[in-house]
Length: 204
Ligand SMILES: NC(=O)c1ccc[n+]([C@@H]2O[C@H](COP(=O)([O-])OP(=O)(O)OC[C@H]3O[C@@H](n4cnc5c(N)ncnc54)[C@H](O)[C@@H]3O)[C@@H](O)[C@H]2O)c1
Image (tube, rainbow, N blue to C red):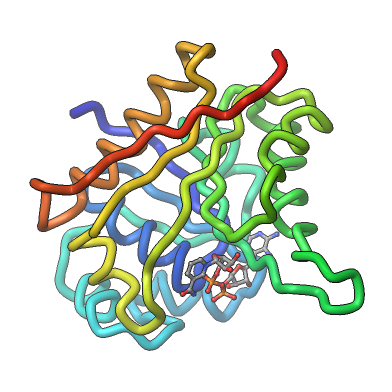
């Protein structure tokens, strides 16, 4: 399978497990805004408690670099995977999607052709709204099902892979299929993984 350049925004449970998974076969830059996390990863230490991530960082030949330089990482990426926090804000009764939107803004500035895959938890309708708001046709959503402390394990043995797309847009549908293949390629369990494409009802 083709090797991709991938940037992952956020090195928490979701971002770091995906960065490690994909860096077995692709060139991956893991972007964070916290210098300590970046330093730990570049020293092959995990900033989060996760047995498989700790083990893979130490023992596997990963093509993974952590960086604070988002502009550099996003400029060179085929895919930008967004795994930043979206904490629930009880005051607004809504998820705080500002970190996701900040990443999308940077990607649109430095590399608008990159396909952005949102892995963060977002409210229903967010992908459609943000595509309309930004004018980008390159944003898709793929829900994450991992458990904290078993994050990489759950991506190595996925129970299912779901990627949203707009089936009317050939490039985006191919990108969604490629992204699902990338997740499968990094997994140990590669067979009997149900894969699902979800049609986004977008007015294009
Ligand atoms: N943890 C889970 O079990 C789980 C499961 C499914 C979905 N999710 C969702 O995935 C998202 C991430 O969850 P998590 O547990 O990995 O979060 P986390 O808080 O562990 O990690 C998020 C990381 O993103 C970094 N970050 C913040 N703003 C950034 C920016 N602008 N650019 C780059 N990095 C930035 C933070 O410094 C942090 O290291 C959330 O939306 C969460 O709801 C989490």
